[in-house]
Length: 421
View (spheres, rainbow, N blue to C red):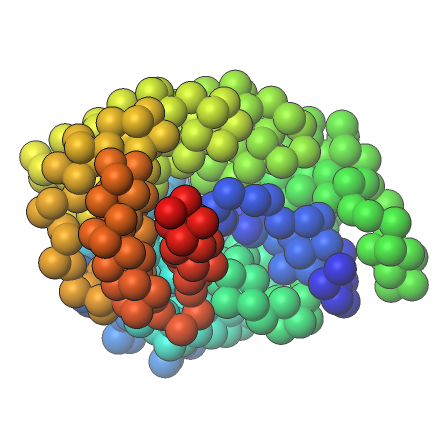
């Protein structure tokens, strides 16, 4: 069991990689503080409060300042239209509070990273952007200690960083700020119980504090943190999702993980994902998740293949953002499902355009995954030497961290080739 220093919740849970097959344990989720284009363009704007300090006072009546405008920008982020979101944020603050825009810049960058989550190219920028948002919102709470909105954004500014840290294996660092997130959300609700979006993070705390294993519950008692209630937590999250001003789309995405991992309702998870795909068709993540759920939770390889085909068609037509990454990923996913369906020659045809994919070209570890799927197809067709060459290529092109466990899978396949002689 991984070490956890705190039990916390925020308005997000850990977001898993596009091809995740296993859920994290509740210890990892809670310890995270949550649970979870070459240029991103989401650097802190010059003249922001980080550089100059903001002096404008924002005192909304019943909720978040410029909520409709910021919610529309959040929708743009969820649609993966990140350049447009950057431009909209530059125009939104003011009149919206500058710390809110700093927070959404961080959210946008985190969603960009999730498009190719194992790639670390944007990590330094993520740390800088998160630090700027945290400094901005902390300054706001210091200047306006009676502002519920300020405390909400203080918690929100820490959430993407905590998710990123968990993905990067920095669980202790993620845990350090966990209690601050929970405290900020509780302070926000103390000041304004009608701030519906804040209930999502509180609901997550109550949920995970209940489903945590016994060892983690003992740690919670040592830290003098209150217990949880799974049902109450789920209702609080649904309340925030239905009545909040900002987080509905994000809540749907985060809640689909709970329906998979702990509620054991994969059909409900699929409903949420399909709703997200209908609203945000240009974001390839949602179709990728649908295909993965169909594979993992329903063993429906035909359905998963159809979903990958839909993503491939959208990528080919330029209907999704980061289409080149989505195209490669869709070909890998589709070929893998076709192998499951014994359509091996078609799998090879689907992979043909990306066989020469560079070892370091995005998405991360793509060449290794292409060659692994190709090897599986060739082995099934009886081309032992071709399969062995593909598996060797997969092993050689796998990056050092091997996030998809390609080396083990390829070596196991090679052993099977040997044993079947």
